[in-house]
View 1 (cartoon, helix red, strand yellow):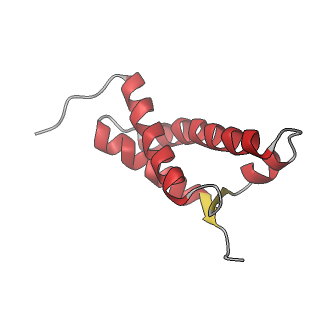
View 2: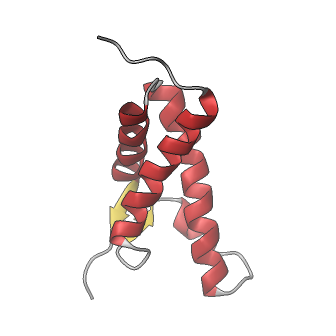
Length: 96
């Protein structure tokens, strides 16, 4: 049985939650977005605002690209799209 498709707003919310949960699990100290981190580091704001900006922009890009490529229609697919985006386009920092 196929589940009913969700409205786009819910798909975006579930995709964003998947990306944010994955990002928050590892935290900004262990996980960095490939090119986005370098761009955010150039901003003339405090480290706290850089972290907030990075996760919000990364999540927005994840929703745009994850939904565009994977076209999730239900909650499990949308959360998985968020996880996949974060796993594919972020890298773990090396231990110091």
